Length: 572
Ligand SMILES: *[C@@H]1O[C@H](CO)[C@@H](O)[C@H](O)[C@H]1NC(C)=O
Ligand SMILES: *[C@@H]1O[C@H](CO)[C@@H](O)[C@H](O)[C@H]1NC(C)=O
Ligand SMILES: *[C@@H]1O[C@H](CO)[C@@H](O)[C@H](O)[C@H]1NC(C)=O
Ligand SMILES: *[C@@H]1O[C@H](CO)[C@@H](O)[C@H](O)[C@H]1NC(C)=O
Ligand SMILES: *[C@@H]1O[C@H](CO)[C@@H](O)[C@H](O)[C@H]1NC(C)=O
Ligand SMILES: *[C@@H]1O[C@H](CO)[C@@H](O)[C@H](O)[C@H]1NC(C)=O
Ligand SMILES: *[C@@H]1O[C@H](CO)[C@@H](O)[C@H](O)[C@H]1NC(C)=O
Ligand SMILES: *[C@@H]1O[C@H](CO)[C@@H](O)[C@H](O)[C@H]1NC(C)=O
Ligand SMILES: *[C@@H]1O[C@H](CO)[C@@H](O)[C@H](O)[C@H]1NC(C)=O
Image 1: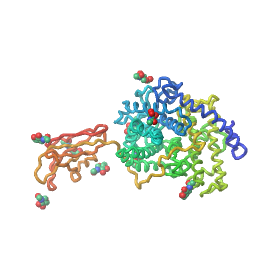
Image 2 (image 1 turned 135 degrees about the horizontal axis):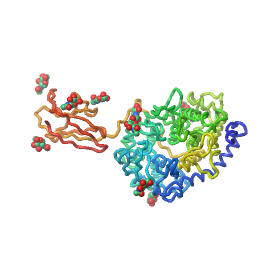
Image 3 (image 1 turned 60 degrees about the vertical axis):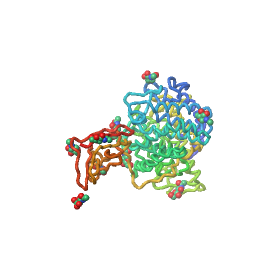
Image 4 (image 1 turned 45 degrees about the horizontal axis):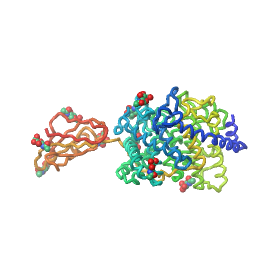
C-alpha cells in the first residue's frame, strides 16, 4: 500500500518520497501514454487496424466492451492533446496526423446518421464506425458536446496555423468544419441531450461549459477570418450560454450539479473535466467560468473527491484529507462502478492548474465557499488573501501540490508495469478493468503531466465575458418561411396573417402580422418559424379596425429541419 503510506503521512517525511515516486512514474508513463495514444489513430496506428486516416479510435477493445468506434467527444479531446504536444514543440512529427484528423472530420460531418444529416442535427451523433460510416444501432443520442469540443480542438490548431503564416489552409480546410460545428452549437445549446457518460438525457454542465468556450473562441476566430455574420450569430448566443452555465451551482451544498436530470447527487467528474477543459490562465480565479482555482471549483473538487472515499475498498484506511481513487460519479453502476484513470488524472490536473495561476498572481484567496477545501490541509486556516510571501501560502500550496501528486500516485499504483491504461481499475483490487488501452486515459495522463509542469495553453478569452442580468433561452433552429398571398384589396384595406404558433401570434387578430404590398396583388411576409414544426394559419383583411377572415378550412404547413421555404396562397 505505497500510496496509502505516502498520501496519509504527507505532512511528515512521506511527501518527498511521494514526489520522487510520481516523478519516476511519469518518466516512463508519459512516453508510454504518447505511444499508446498514437497506436490508436488510423491509418498506421499499431492497434487501430481498419481505422481510416485521422480516425482516433476510443480503444482497440472489440468485446466486453466493444469500443472500436470513433467518438466525436473522445477524439476531439485527444486531438486537443495532440495539438498541445505539437504546438508546444514537444512532438514535430504529429503534423500529418493533425491534417488527417481535419480531413476525416470533414468527411464525417457529412455522413447521414440516426441523429440526422449535417443540416438537420446529425452533428450531434456521438459515435461512428472507424471506416467513417454511420453507426446505426441504438444509442444515447444526440450528444451535444461533440461539435463544441471538435471546434475547440480545431480552433487551437487554426490559431497555431494563423500565427505561423498559414491562414489560407485555415480558411479553406479548417474553418468550414469549425463553422458547421459552431452553427450547430449556437442552434442547439439550449436543447436536451445525453451527457458525456452517455446516460442522462438533460442539460449537462460539461456540455454547456464546452459550448461556451467553443462559441467564444469561435467568434474571435470568425472575426479574425472576416466571417462577420458567423461571429455575430455566435456572439448573440454567448451571453445566454454563459448565463445558463451559472445555474448548475448548488449554493447550499457547494458543488456543481452536473446534470439537470438523472436523479443523482450531481457530484460528477463531469464538472472537474469541465474545469480543466475550460482552463484559461489569463482569467485568474474567475468563478463565473469555473476556473480551476475559483472558490466554487475548489469546493466542488472536495465534494467530488469525498464522494468516493467510502465506496471503493481500495480507498479504505486513508486519512480524510488524502488523495484517493476517483471515478465518474458515486452512483455509477457501469461494470459495478469503479475508479477510472482519466477521472483520477483530472482530479490532479485541476489542482496543478490552480497552483500555476496562484503562482502567477502571487497570492491565493480563501473564501467561505472554498474554506473547507483549504482546511483539509490546514484545519485552522481562515478566509482571506494570502500573498506568496506568507508562510500560509507556502504551506498550503506545498500541501496542495502533494495532494495533486497523490492522485497520480494512486493511478501509478494501479498501472501495470508495461504502462497500459485501461478505462477503469477495479474498486476492490485495483486491477485494470473494462476497455484496454483507452485513448482518453492516455490523453488525460499527458495533459495532467503538462499541467504539473506549469504548461498553459493560449487564452480562449474567459475573462472577456459579460454576464447578463437575466438568462435567455434559445428555442433552436428556425426556417425562414415566406408567405405570399395573392389578394386584391380596396383602398385602406391591408392583409395580415395569424396562426397557431407564437411566431404567428397565437391566432390573435390584434397582434396579427402585416404583409407587404410591394408586389401587389401579391402580399408578402417572411417569418422565422421553428424547424420541424406543424402549424395552422389564415390570412385576414383589416380595414379601419374591421376584420374579415378567409373562409375555412385553416391552412396548415410543416417546416423542414433548416433553410427556408416559400408558400404561395390565394385569398379565399
Ligand atoms: C464499415 O464498418 C462497418 C462496421 O464494421 C461495416 O459494417 C461496414 O460494412 C463497413 N463499410 C465499408 C464501406 O467498409
Ligand atoms: C499550410 O498547412 C498545410 C497543412 O499542414 C500544409 O499542407 C501546407 O503546406 C501549409 N502551407 C504553408 C504555406 O505552410
Ligand atoms: C434553456 O435556457 C433556459 C434559460 O437559461 C433555461 O432555463 C433552460 O433550463 C434551458 N433548457 C435546456 C434544455 O437547456
Ligand atoms: C431526450 O430528452 C428530450 C427532451 O426532454 C426528448 O425530446 C427526447 O426524446 C429524449 N431522447 C431520448 C432518446 O430519450
Ligand atoms: C482575491 O480576491 C480579490 C477580491 O475579490 C481579487 O481582487 C483578487 O484578484 C483575488 N486574488 C486571487 C489570487 O484570486
Ligand atoms: C392573382 O390571382 C388572380 C386571380 O386569381 C390571377 O389572375 C393572377 O394571375 C394572380 N397573380 C399572381 C401573381 O399569382
Ligand atoms: C403565444 O403563446 C405563448 C404560450 O402561451 C406565449 O408564451 C407567447 O407570448 C404568445 N405569443 C404571442 C405573440 O401572443
Ligand atoms: C373608421 O372607423 C371609425 C370608427 O368606427 C369611424 O369613425 C371612421 O369614420 C372610420 N374611418 C374611415 C376612413 O372609414
Ligand atoms: C381553425 O383553428 C382555430 C384555432 O385553433 C379553431 O378554433 C377553428 O375551429 C379552426 N377551424 C377549422 C375549420 O378547423
